[in-house]
Amino acid sequence: MILEIVCGFALAFSPHWSLFAIARIGVGMAHPAITSTCIVIGMELVGPFGRRYGSLISGGFFSLGHMLLACIAYFVRD
Image 1 (cartoon, helix red, strand yellow):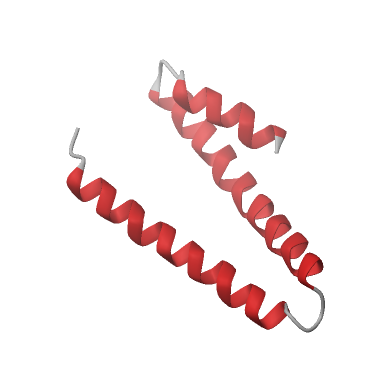
Image 2 (spheres, one colour):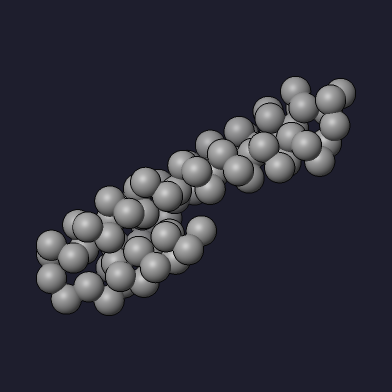
């Protein structure tokens, strides 16, 4: 979490492309670990009988988020 926060701020305020690239690598390495942790915690909260539906719902929201991001990127050009 700390690595992603630090690299995220470095991305936002990087004055040079090389620092931007290094910070982007840090975010790319930290993000899958955070996503996996959230999925595991979510599966532990619903219990053994709801894990199937919990994973389907979380995967559905993940897919909807990506589709919404594409729509926003298409309509917001600047």
